[in-house]
Length: 134
Image (cartoon, rainbow, N blue to C red; front, side, top):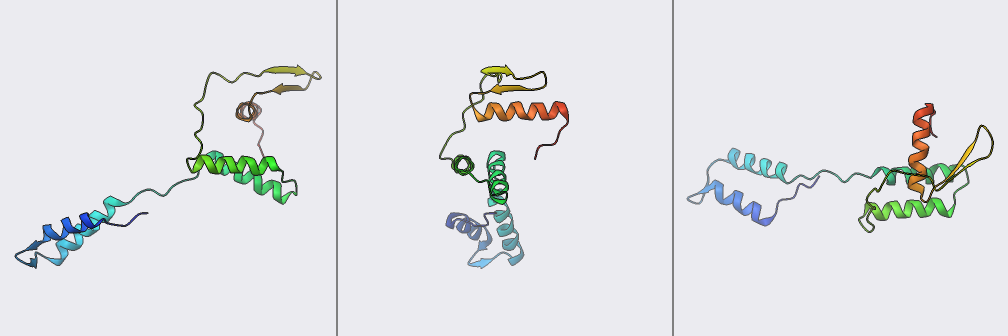
């Protein structure tokens, strides 16, 4: 957390606790400094869910010796989004597949226009089947 006071904040605290060239009390000054420090604290930055997911995918792929440029590109984009270099597009209408093909009675291939759509579709399938995703 940020525990830094600006020169202006320090000056205001000092002026408030000096009277006639002397400190009112050291305890009062200490309490004022502690209160000012607590007020300046900022929460630590946190990684977004997409950044964490991309990092985990890269780690798993590297350990399985199947790391591809796509894994690296996804992590690179997630890092840039985290740093504010890219803006995440606003969600649009409901996710709909572009094409659905039935290959057998038991399997259906769904083609999406983006990885985000495919990810949402996959999560929905996992939620309905109760399967765990690895």
